[in-house]
Length: 442
Length: 175
Image (cartoon, rainbow over all chains, first blue to last red; front, side, top):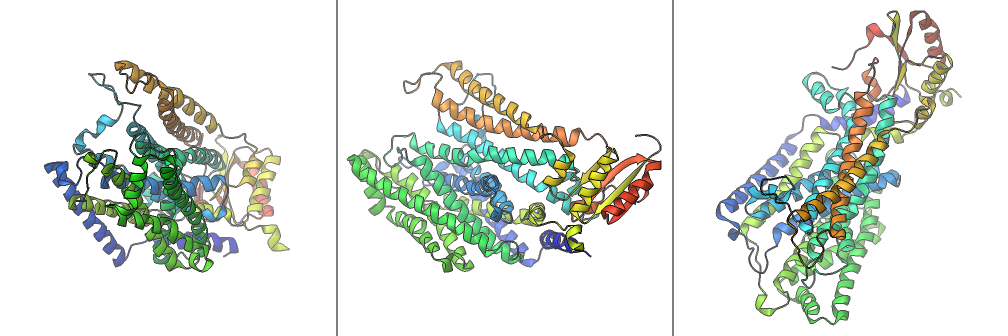
């Protein structure tokens, strides 16, 4: 067998080989995820039956954990597109072995995020009112509203991300199909749309992939900017700030990269992909996290500075409340986990040590969740007039649905890595230097 | 395809062998062939000398429809009831640009996929022979030619370093 056969065949065996029958541990994880989803779904059913009063939502804090989850998951989605689309345009070679999992994370994160506007409606069956459809009463949604911009942005991002993910998968599905027999071969044949890898197909495919990457790129910036404007276009102190778009986008990339690490580290271990997902990949992710962490930290400082510098008693009061008020614990978790903990990545030993990477990535995700919570709840709880101040406490329903949503996300990812290759075999082969007959015979 | 045309598949391990074979086929004025590879390769694309894919026009058209359509949707619906909110004009540029932008990206992406499907798959003129190794670790060259040219082509492929040659009887389409 020739060297080229061995190299390309090894890639196929190592990566497509992970799609064989799973072991007991995999089914244990699936069971836990399913149990969590059922628990969350049960809590949602109870909420639909009893009304939103079973949550902690009230006046003045009408947005809390559900919107926190929505913003959190949308934010996480952005890093996947950064890695798969933006780094593709920048020709960053270190992206090759990690972008598939990151893209899948994006798709599933948006699918998770999309649940929350529906859950938060209370009367979830009316969710279709959000979409512009012709009706007898000639009613249309209000396009001046950022909530409507969200509908369009999230829908667009979901559709474009799914298309981009699937497009990248097609040649890999063909490679997988050609190794299988029987019913599975037939199923993957259909999923691959009969892909054969002719020069004509590659010509159009390459162009399509390039344009989709170029189209997905502005979405990374625009979607989370639009989500941030849900808050920034209001008048609440702590929300009404021009910093929100870049602040949220940087935070989104920050949390998303951390989630990529959280997913890839166990994936690499369980599938024994150390040869393909290397410490260098993780180190590069950690370096970008340093950057995003610094931006997020700078945004925190800027907000406090402007609150003080503005002289506005309302703005000052809100920010002091964040630091020492009812939600001070959440605030300090946010500051420490998001801006201080990632500074450890300045040390090479930390950013090349897999356990440190995993622990820090989880802390960042916790911190970013609390950041959304603090921004949303503290501004609502402590706005202009003391008479309108109020306290929000999370209920078991919201916590159960939150837990269920995490299980839903991990379930989707677990299923994905067992039916589709978690690393792009096509791009790995494309990067290898092909074997040349003339060189061999010299 | 003439009734006495034969099909032949060359399977290659070395990229330069494939490139050399394609060059020789072009010199022999044989046009009825297709090249397979498990990944895209610029050398092969340049050799085949095709113009850039027309998919980009689909993207452009989708983007233009999305841009004007998106703005039009927001403007049309705002004018339907004519409610003045916050003292702002009925057709307000900043929020409608956001709507327009998102629908631009959406329709451009969908149109790009339509372009791919239309160009790469629906317009497949004919099916050439295929071997499942072409998606794994080998390159391929499938062609059709009159029977009397086959020996010369076989000789050419062998001199270029082909790994294996299949004729129509031995090929299988993956099903």
